[in-house]
Length: 418
Ligand code: GLU
Image (cartoon, rainbow, N blue to C red; front, side, top):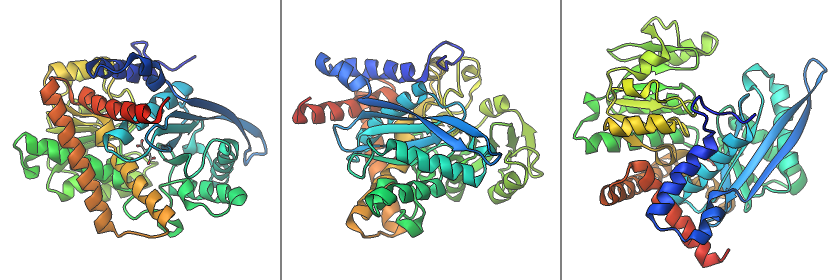
């Protein structure tokens, strides 16, 4: 059974919906419509793993390659129990539009394994990671398809994947991005998605005539993206008043001490709840807080028609991919909430992945300062382009972002020939 949200829409259909609106707005050549909407290739594999208990467990793994008109396929690998082909398909197409919008020379892909990394040992995770790469060997490569981390994966998993690929092909750091720095990873890659969230949030805040010091922020999702976004926004002067995870949330109107909160989460079985420097609240309460910026940085479909009417934030910055359902998005738009869409807000990850890939191919390394400067330049330019199109065409930021991205992919397709 495909996983649907309670309104009956799968994630891939949601992205298709936005694609159709934007394609119509740019009068996309009808010959390109089916070609650009659908993935080029979808691969599903079995990953049999001998678990620590001695029992054999078979996991399902996926890689969807959506489009490579502008460069090799690129996108993360998600380890999560709820991963299915519909999600991976949606996420792969978002990668195509994201890479095109921020103008990195990549196409779009995504992978996933339906497993629960929180309940697996290091050995078991290593087996899944290595086996995934063996099974994908035919379709990946440093000039073909370059995986990266996503929800449930990290630099250790990328290291195993790089190592596994190298056993057959020789040392090839450019096969994955998001590696540890000692193995050719890029400085600042780990925090890049959160940094991009910070840059785009600040751009939106500035456009509203506010200073960071006046801004209160609530964040849903306190993994890699949420933690970096929180810390970097706090460094800029914003007040982080609430943070939530899958279990619940904590709130402190005076601002949370993030270092203590991270330590608490690690000690406390990976939830922020029960933090002494804040009050426990529910995630529903977090989403409805009277704050300026709300950052959904966990999973898709978090803001829907049930909670969107309660949102009081002026700006939503989509740290996660697809955190708003169609209805949620519509309600926020009606209520005048500014949404910075995922394909811009969380593009910092793939931008710094691009720098990492370039450094690996050149066997050269750049310094943090240069990386963050280049990251900022690209996001700032893309933000301005998006806002300009949105104003000119009288469409939402999301549709404007899709319009720019689809135009670029269509042009590349045209020049190459289908
Ligand atoms: N998983 C990240 C994303 O959704 C990063 C992808 C990459 O760096 O290739 O954008």
